[in-house]
Image (cartoon, rainbow, N blue to C red):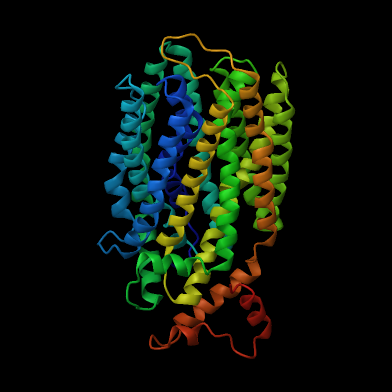
Length: 489
């Protein structure tokens, strides 16, 4: 891996790898449920079950692909073959989600369910090995935060680009079905190429890092997936990270999935107005990403998340209190929310490599794929839960779906109340749990430095030393012992 800092080209190449998945994820969370109910004409409850069942399949394929990528042996390393082979099927599956081939509700249900499952499988095959590259590229505590700032600059930039594209298409194309089919086609093409740019730009550094990690890890028999999951869940700081990530992502996706309904049904604005509000959130998040990255060197990762989430909570409460006609205030709250959304992107993924280092210290193994599998799964779980909750809530509240070619119906008061609850109190409650977990997160910069020191000491010892011996803290280092012991489950 070496001590050489990552070059700007390497950081840009790594960041580009998240452009495609970000475009797809953003378009799906902002538009898919709305598309299924208001364009394809499915009842909200049925549409929600499609998305929920598809995400349940991820509960199976995420850890399996994570372990498989950890065990992959090829001249191109463990991660790159998955990315190279999976990129094209990922683009094709994404495009097919925006086609309306049938009129019958149950035929559409089966079609979208099959395509959604296939898409999620391809998404995992590409995105999970990509996220597992970060610990191979650098070990430096602050460098990892900077690397993730590049990654999520591309991620948020892709989100912004997809929203701009949607706004242009919506303004130029009158037919709703054609709008979404064109959006899906263009986004699919834009999502494939950056994966290969990432491979090209990081390959040399990634392979050096992988050889370094392979050389220092201990040789042990391969363990079943269930055993590896159990070991990962014994990593106490990792439990904090996945809790923080689930809460922040669930809050973000819950808000994003309900915003189209909020803007059109509650605020009374045209559908084309929604991408503008989403742009205000994502544009602010893009700018604040680098601000928070710089501040994290002073405030720490926990402090940055606390500050950003606090602003985010204020914005969510404001949206709940917002009244029709207060368009200017709506955009101001979107900007405020964007300040907090940036920390949801940046902080959990910057914490994750630190927990992987701790796992290596405790077990002698590098299992980036398994740990990243949890994070990718939680991202999808957040999307699934938010879409399912929103779809079921508005159906229970009497939301009236639009049918192709029919006028947009007027929603009952019960549906409008459900929309407001989903955009305000629910995300706020989830965010507060995430803030609590961030405050309690135990790996500080100093503790991470001690973890790396012990890993360095391990490398200098004989390969015959057992895992339990190399992890032992000597008696003349009581302070380090107490700090690292506090990380045990």
